Length: 70
Picture 1 (cartoon, rainbow, N blue to C red):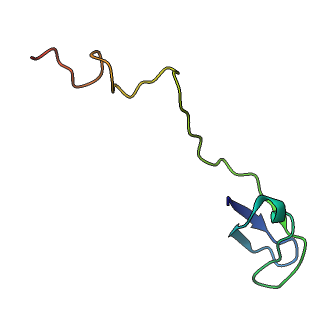
Picture 2: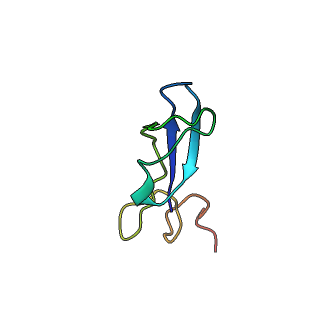
């Protein structure tokens, strides 16, 4: 279940809630009980997997710290 960020249009309280996707639009304000609340857009974390470019330096000999020492 994802966590969503919300703002209450009545009292202005900002809060987050851990809810199933199907119930993300059926949330009440924990402060005043108002419903519906506004779901906020957030910049949530992005995870990548697979063969994209990486600058982490892991898995290649040209990464930081390799220094050419044996």
